[in-house]
Structure formats: structure tokens, C-alpha cells
Length: 233
Image 1 (cartoon, rainbow, N blue to C red):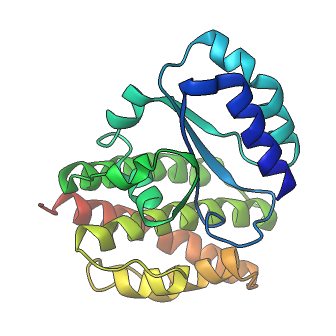
Image 2: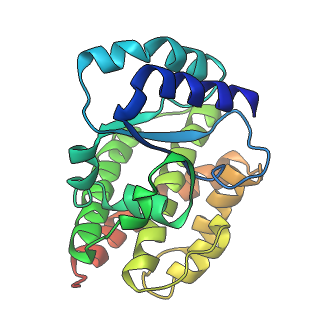
């Protein structure tokens, strides 16, 4: 991936010894020939406005190549965020590839208390947003699918964390994650699996099915929130 090599060279040239680590994370992290949607974490010793300005041009080129905006932290931010970003750090720990510098991702240590707490927080935010769907009375099938896709994407992230809370290996496929998580949480597995198939496998459904799943999801999110709130680790 030539654009990645060029981007790394630009980072090293502009940040010098201040650059501690660069690594890829997410679904494309360990793919041999990744698509142009590679998530990157950049960690520096110190991070000033001047540092950000100095790499703004290569960052813009990287984003213009259809890559996500890199996450940039200084060393202090990185080590002090294991609690508030427990879900994100757990995902990184399970799937990352060091591209430059120190392998600081291997030092990630997640406290289950904070992981459960962030799951609860994410679910509460999801529930608040999802209820707006009913208040706004979204009638377009296209818009409804977008809403459901966003919901199942978040729920799969939560389900991965629930498996980690129970010291279980996290599968790659969303359907397998849902299946395994059903051992620890009660929800409509048929609806969740169908939504995952729609999101990740381009499965189809009619409007009646959409309306049914939309209604079931509200009950499930409320139920899952109660169950996670009752968990103790």
C-alpha cells in the first residue's frame, strides 16, 4: 500500500523523535492488501498545535484517499485512557498491527469494571438516539435501513465486549458474535442475526419485516441495558 508508506514517511519526517508509535487497528489491520479504509493510531511524546499543523497536509492526503481520519494522542493521553475508552482499547488489543516505533498496544490492560461501565453508557446513548426514530416517524425504507444498520453495528461492538467480560474468545463474524453472546444475554436472536445479515452480507427484507424488527429492537435494547446494568465484575 504505497499511500501508507508515503504517509508513514511524512509522519517521521515531520515529527522526528517525537513520534513514538503508529499502528493499524480494526478489521483491515492484519489484511495483507488492505482496502483504503485503514484505521490508524498515532502516538507522540508531546503534542502541540505546531505538531498538528506540521502533519496536517499529509493527513489531508491520507483522508482524501478514502481513509478514516487517524486518531492522534500524546503518550500521556494514551496511557490515561484505558478506563474511558475500554471498548475501543479492547478492540485494538485484539486486532492491531504495528507499523512504526514502540509496540505500546501490547501494554493495554482493561479493567472489567470500566468495560462494563462503557457498555452501559454506549447502550444508554444508543437507546436515546433510537427512540428518536419513533418520535420522528421515519417512513422511508432506505432511512429505516440506515437506522437499523447503525444500531446493529453498535450492538455487535457491545456484544464483543460482553464476551470479553466473560473471558470468551471473540469470533470474527457478526453472526457468530451474536450466537455466542446469546449465552450471556437474553434477546431476540433471530432479529439480531437478520439485522447482521442485512448490514454485513447485503441480505434483503420487505417493509413488514423492517417494521417488526424496528419494534423488537426497542424492546431488546431496553432489556439488554437492564441485563448489563445488573452485571458485576
